[in-house]
Length: 102
Image 1: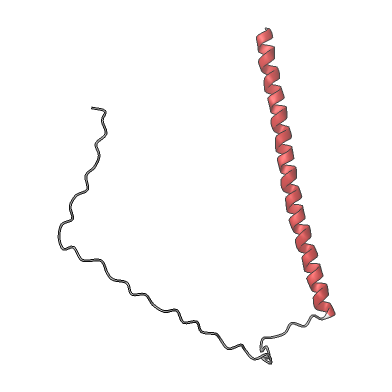
Image 2: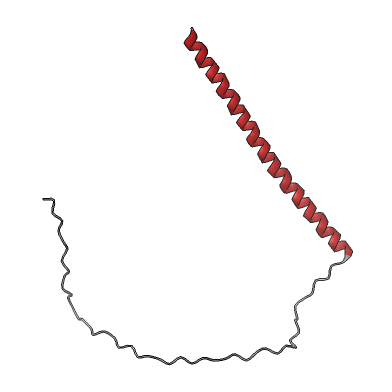
């Protein structure tokens, strides 16, 4: 009743093909020719003017200030929520203990 039954491997049915013969192949290494060193980049170049640098610094400062304000407000929300939960717990504990005294 509690003895495990070992499954038996069924015999294959249908056509059984012989295993394929794999022939070894030779490995040929190709050495790529190096690119000429005098290739000139045709992409556009970025030239920073003093106005563009000032705009980048101003934009970066604005992003840092906005992200900082968001993070500080989230931290403040968590702190206020934790304080209110603590006050509620104290009030409930006080109500429960005052009921047991009466």
